[in-house]
Length: 138
Image 1 (cartoon, rainbow, N blue to C red):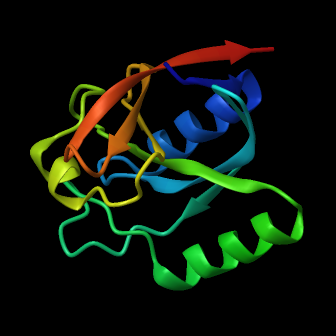
Image 2 (tube, rainbow, N blue to C red):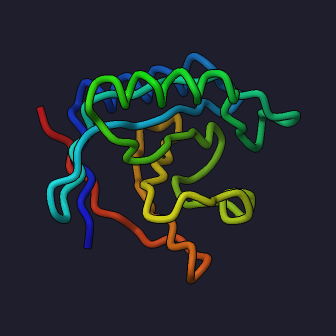
């Protein structure tokens, strides 16, 4: 089982982004390094949600994604995954999340406005999410 290590500062950044954008879904990229089964998050990149229905789904603005990927590569990190919020819901992946997931092995972090945080790894071959342990560190 993989473990996603999120520094408390990054969790606070993600939750702040979610609260600021509510009732729309917030979204962004998570970057860091992988050491065996541990994924250590080092940075988050909030991105604009350009979905036609941002109250219930997210689409990361392509130009924001390109900019984030360029910075991540330039800093010698790798994409660990993505985050988004469910302002009015649970931290479990929705049917829409299942239908849109495509980055095999990526962490999909979901937060809500109650401050709950969960991470799910997309398994492309099985077309499903697997729960990932999240460790919040100071």
